[in-house]
Amino acid sequence: MRRRHPQPFWREFTRCWYVQIGKQQVRLSPDREEAFKMYHDLMKRTLEGLPSPPPTSLGTRSPYVVEVLDAFLDWCLRNKAQPTFVYYRDNIQRFVSRIPSTLLVSDLKPFHVTQAMSDFPNWGNNTKNDFISSVKRALNWAVDEELIDRNPIERMKKPAREARETAVSPEEYARVVAMVDEPKFLDLIELAWETGARVQELRQFEARFVDLANGRIVLPPSKAKGKKYHRVIYLTERAKAIVERLMQESPTGALLRNTEGNAWSKNAINSAFCRLELAFGRKALKELGIEPQVPPRFRADGIPSERLAQARASHRALVRKIRKEDEALAKQHGVKYHLGAFRKGYATEALKNGVDTATLAHLLGHSDTSMVSRVYAKVQQDPKFMAEAARRAKGLGSGNKHDAE
Image 1 (tube, rainbow, N blue to C red):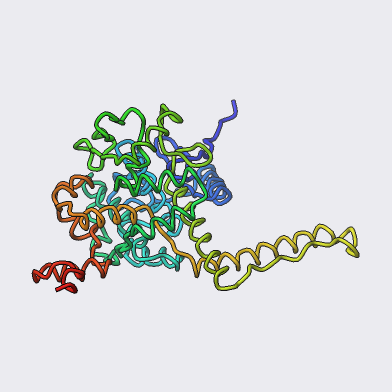
Image 2: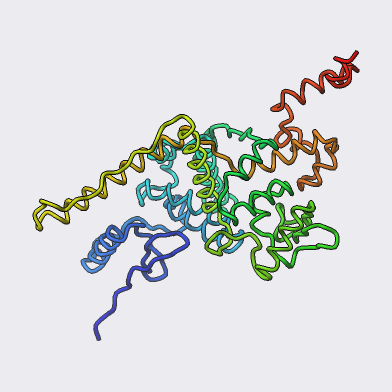
C-alpha cells in the first residue's frame, strides 16, 4: 500500500499553515504558496534522509519564537474573551509574519520588534504601545508557564500612550446629531451621550439586561469590565425611549445594530466615524467655495475594440484617483470623533451640573474617583466655566452678579 504523507492544514485562529509530522506540529507560513514550498522541502528532506530542521518542541531550552507565540494564542483562545483573543492575534500575527520562522527565542532582540513596526510608518504611539505590549505579554506568559527561561524583550521601552483629550460639548453634540444621516449610527451616538457607557458596554446592550422599571441597564459580571461586579448603567428619559424602541426591534441579541442589522464591531464604528468626518469636511469645503472634482465621462468613440478594455480600466483608475484626492482634502477640513469623546463629554457636563465625583465615578462604572479626575472630566476645556469657577473660588459669584455690583 502506498504510504500517505501528511498534508498541510490551515489554523484559522493563528492564520497560518501547519503540518503534522508524527507527534510534532510544524509551523509553515501564513502565505499559502510559501507554506507549500516549505512543506515540499520538508517532505523531500524526510524522504532523502537528510537532517531535519532543529527541533521545535516547546520543551527545548530555546524554542522558535513563532512556536511560543502560537502556544500563547492557543491559550488565549481557550481562556480569554473573543475580543481579547482577536486583539492579541492581530498584533502577534503582524509580528510573526515579519520575522524568520526559524528565529529562536534566545536570538530574539528588541530590534526585531522595532524592525517589524517600521513596516507601519503611520502608526501612532498608542498602536505601537499595543503592538509591543502584545508581544511582551506572550513572552511573559511563556516565562510563567516555564516554556522559556526569560523574556528577551522584557526591558524594551514602549512609547507613552497619548490620551484622547477630546470631550464633546453640548454644542458639538448638537452639530454631530444634525450631521448624522444614518439612524442606526445616531442611536449609538445618542446612547453614548445620554448614558456615558463604555464602547464595549454599548455593544453588549441586550433586552434581557434592561430594567425599565428602574430606568437602568444591568450587565452581569461576565459582560462587565473586570468581570467581577454587575455594571449598572442609568438611563435618562431620552435614553429610555431609545432603548424601548430598540427592544421592540431586537427582542434578542444586541440592541444596537448597524444598517446591515449586525451588532456594531470596533471596525464598523470606526468606519461610521470616518464617514462622519468626510461629511463634516465636505460641508466645510462647500462653505469655503471649494467644489469637488468632477471625473470625466468615459467615451468609447474612436477607441479600437482591442484597446477598449484597457481604456475602461484606465478610466476607472482615474476616477478612483480623483475620489481619493477629494476624500483626502475633505479629511483635512473634517473633524474625527470617537465614542470615548461622548463619554468624556458626559462626565464633563455632569461635573459642571453639580454631580459630585464619587457619584459620577459610579455612574461611569469606576470603583473610585481617580479616573474621573485624571481622564474623563475635561472641565478645563470650557474657558467660560473655568472663569466662573475662578470667580466663585474668590467668593465673587457669577460674572453677571459681579457686573451688577
